[in-house]
Image (cartoon, rainbow, N blue to C red; front, side, top):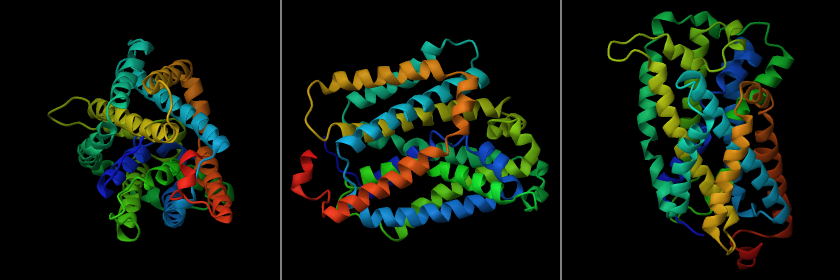
Length: 349
């Protein structure tokens, strides 16, 4: 399986992969652990991530997945996609349609993803362009709560000690937990398309701005003590807003987010397909169907409040293991060996 991406397509896919699954869920863990200095911790985590992206841009040619690392990432991606689907089902059951069977909700997410995955790769590549509508909607309506903002909530206090800084920063890094996808997709960008320098900075800055805006808006609206009781502060914030043309902004936002999640699922599975089908395999369409069935099976059993919240408490780990430590280990090992993705011998590795 092979595709060619323009720079815009590459960044659009990456933007949806980074924001689609985590955008509604990251604010509470960051602010609960970081307290009033959470926004500073997120800036620090984002600067670290930007430096990591620069490093990955210079060394992506050494990111070659062998048999063991491929299996590790496949298991992680399967769980990550299953958890994202389970969280989406939990969100719909909580905010939109509590009486809809989980099977029906699974079909809502997995059937469009399966259709796109069985189609040409360009279907997954081009579908992310609608993300811009979501961004404008979110900024406009969250900003409408400005009259209720308490700007003193942004003032750092002495309650943010070492533990708060450590955990607040770790959960801030969680916003960028899919960095390994950058390394996988990077080699498919057309060679005449420049990524390093200004384009990469603008991409990372757009991610940072999107996350930072949501964190600051939530901190301005809620006190730090409330975040331990609020799992999705963005939806609570929108729920409290009153506008003339719609009764519940949170429902509109949640439904748009469902669509974004489906797009993210499609793009994420594109990454899985690129890794899995780098070798010729028998019955590729059957394998894609089985993969979606596995996602649905796992998601069905963990789509419960207690499981979703339990997993959420430990979801700072994926960035450290799969987005930072393992990629760097793979890059260093292959650099020592002198192996790159451009070597013809790697086509079967």
